[in-house]
Amino acid sequence: MQPATASFTYVPNPGRVLFGSGRMREIAAELERLGCRRAFVVCTTDQRELALRAATEFGARSVFAEATMHTPMTVTQAALSQLQAADCDSLVAIGGGSTIGLSKALALRTDLPQIAVPTTYAGSEMTPILGETSEGQKTTLRSPKVLPEVVIYDVDLTLSLPPGLSAVSGVNAIAHAVEALYAHDTNPVISLMAEEGIAALGRALPCILTVPNEIAAREAAQYGAWLSGICLGSVAMGLHHKICHVLGGKFDLRHAETHAVMLPHVVAYNSAAAPAAMVRVAKALKRAGAASGLFALNRTLANPLSLAELGMPREGIAQAVDQVMQDQYSNPRPLDAAALQSMLARAWSGEAPRGG
Image: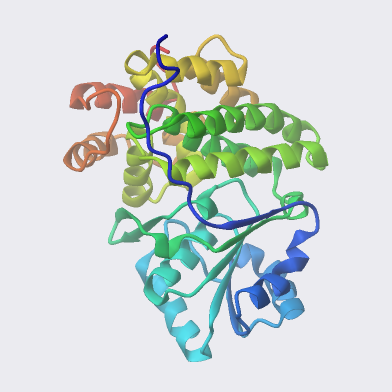
């Protein structure tokens, strides 16, 4: 009998997850469990009111409400100064990927424990990955120091997430699961999570667009984002994440929207080199093809389809290709500059992906 699967290594990331309506109220108990009493709360300007209310409830020492997309070093330094001046002993991040990125940057520099309370589907809260930007260059690192000790998924916090932002944030989460399916170090456990995560998000996001307050759809999207975040944090990233990091850092493009635009095109680029992964993506989406299915999902969700509408200049295509080729991530299909140029040109103009 042939073995059911090839040899593999699976190492789950540590962390405590609380999932369910109203569980944000348990922040105080979780801080106490960690032995912490002087929390430093981080959020974006948009989440300031929510964060201040929560901070009052669990007696936070200080609130920093200037978390910014792509985690600029300058913002991190400002937050670090406030944290040290307040003599805080823990971090509480309330918000999306920008907020959780800042909390991770602070944890890297202080080794303080973190509680992450995500309000989007970014997935960063489940990963030991940190991306930081300085002078137009975005770099990433992996370290157990940046992995939150506790993650609280409270579906109530996602109800105010606008349907359009929910849609792009959800496709961003799908990207984490898709790349996990063809990562060089993937394994059967992660593949199961990835397929389930894609399927949950694929079902939930169109429902959220039409009925934004449907709790079942919001819970399904949050569940899918959680699984996809585990995938992102457990195996290597590929071409998709590399390109999105380059585009985001170099041109300051919106994070989730960039992932949504690029995902069908990178999947098409890799389709012939990772056929088994493509079958699983198409199956999860209930579509005939992986790349075409993802592009169709973006259309259904009214997501941006082109890099041009995100503000990327056409002349930036060549610059992006050069940077991607210089520092390559592992990828099932070798990187070819001419093919990447063609792929990015299609993504820039909003054409359908070629192949897949």
